[in-house]
Image: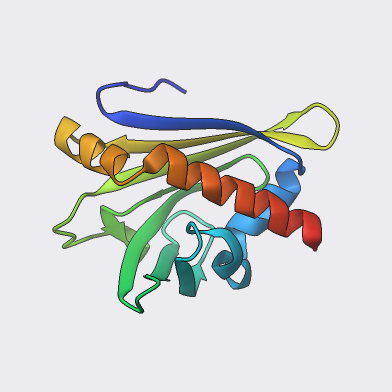
Length: 157
């Protein structure tokens, strides 16, 4: 996949779980609260319909109890390989009224070694300002922590 360093943020990791396990963690809403945001933050509600046009929704909660809804639309879903969603659209490809930073997330899963996954998470942005904002929010560290939490959770199941 071609990325643009001026607009995109990329995280590469090797996870000690299979692509199928990583896919299950990404596409099972009941599992999101265990890994999807760096602790002590948590996901208190998740809805995900892994098909083009399907809903991608998470309600994140800060340690202080403040809640932050994140709405989006699934653009592509290839089981065990690729999940793409965007905050620029709502379910059914309906344009979003999102006034904050919009981005498209691409999750790539590839078999690696024995029962491991080459995990690539890409945050694609429409402009350099949104990319910088997402980077300043801690994209690399936060998404890296989440990948580690996903790995730990799936290994414990």
